[in-house]
Image 1 (tube, protein in one colour):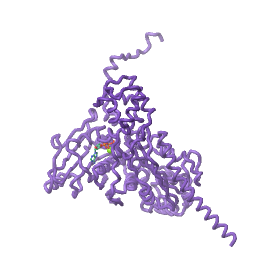
Image 2 (image 1 turned 60 degrees about the vertical axis):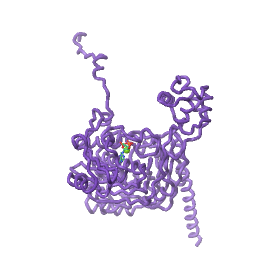
Image 3 (image 1 turned 30 degrees about the vertical axis):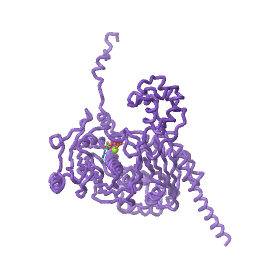
Image 4 (image 1 turned 135 degrees about the horizontal axis):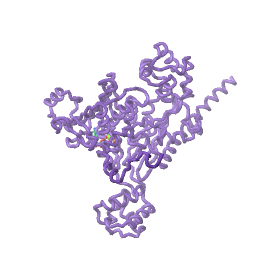
Length: 581
Ligand SMILES: Nc1ncnc2c1ncn2[C@@H]1O[C@H](COP(=O)(O)OP(=O)(O)OP(=O)(O)O)[C@@H](O)[C@H]1O
Ligand SMILES: [Mg+2]
């Protein structure tokens, strides 16, 4: 082949490339990368939508000082399609804000502040609406009421993903106002708008989406149950797609202490951030700037920082040059400043953790520990740990009906896989034990079992002693929200695995969760939880966080060791007595 015959490659120039270079809107980005927001499969998508709405409702009620009451309604509208409705008795939302909150990604009230709340990014509910719109073409419906005297506002929205802007579909692009009183009630009924009628304040969001409803691990049922455990002040009325109503009744009418908003702590600030703050400040002296921008900086501390940086306390922060900024930054690191105030976080508390664990796992021994607040990257946080020992595994509490349903819904390929993925705490040895007790092969397809075989399996699950083969169950929480996915990526699981549980009397293989009838509940409360992704599923392992987790786990571990030692001694004494009698 001569040179001339070679196929010519089309040349791309900087100019032709320039023609294709343009902005990418946030909503376009997340529509393509929906897995980053927790919408990677239909099953998880349904859960994520419920979770975003419920978390928002709880945040809004608590912020407004209202004891939360929620209505969660999931209805099947077609195969693989569901309508999710979540209503709260919260403060409601003013008319102008509704389209932006539900129809624009990255719009919210929590991102720019340092205060503990469930949401923090300003993406959650609009992303759920966008997912619904993309998979079913249906708009998101919102009705919100701020008082019994004022009209309610009703919107049907779509997101213009190209521009990341809401599009109002109803009321000629303006939304509809529903008058207060009986007239309004009639309007709501006539127009088929969903609303729990007796409420005269609150918000309801309805999203229709492609999803899959399943029970067991990682399900909506599990999320609501775990939410109720960590939030004893909340009542949730839940109706599942089969129309079965469940109410999680509150056990306390007291709201958790209100977390205070704080300013950033100087130790957590980065140089670039400091430079931006200088540019944007409205203060006129360095001393004012330092005391008003940061927490824990008194005028005395400000003076020390300025002295160390060799800058006058009266210099104008707007005129600070690059070198001076760096000197100030270093001076901050070298000045002793007290740890951030911690009234910005509100822990669940040892007694409620114990109560919650007791509710979930009826065991024989319980322990809890709340660590004192600590700081990572300037953000205050706090770790709480609870532990329950003994009791039967969830697999042994399951009724025949529920088991039949779980088997029918399962897409696990083998019975062994079904047992391990449906029930917490059954490891591979537990599954083997059950199957050999039931004299069943491991490879049977779960959904094809006959009624007789299901009964057989159910009996085996009840009879087998699972406590030895069981692996530790870990319940993870961040700002009172249960974390149900990505355990391996999460700092909590990593800290549990890294802990030496053999020292406390449990069996543990290297690099694995310990075995035994143990459940551990870990809560991280912080003004900013460092999630590993936007879907808020796992906590990043900052060294400060890992250290606090370790100390918390050790505290409950030591209590467990004392209990197990005492129990073993008692048993041995009993055995010895039997020998001599
Ligand atoms: N049910 C509600 N009642 C009152 N205000 C609400 C309600 N739901 C959402 N909001 C407001 O809308 C904002 C945006 O909600 P969104 O879920 O998108 O983000 P977020 O909760 O701030 O953060 P995240 O993305 O982490 O959930 C919230 O910050 C809150 O101010
Ligand atoms: Mg939210």
